[in-house]
Length: 71
Image (tube, rainbow, N blue to C red; front, side, top):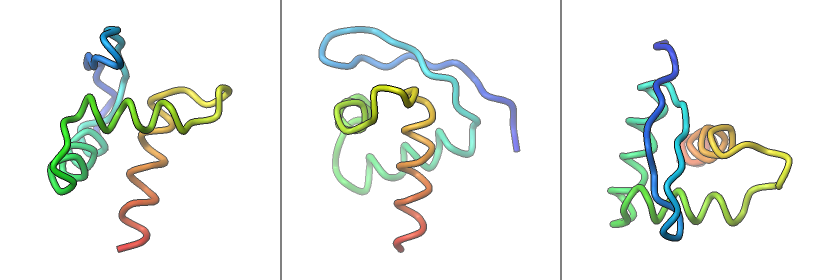
């Protein structure tokens, strides 16, 4: 597995960054494309649903994991 890389996203017109391993980033992108959504839209959806004590990068990883576990 690769080391986390910081990437930028825009959530509700606010720039933020998350550090994700390339494998999670690619899977995150695949999920967004399969749902005909942008990465920013999917990230905003995950951000709104996450527990305030859970970081955005962790919430994205858990979303990716849940997505592929239910396939």
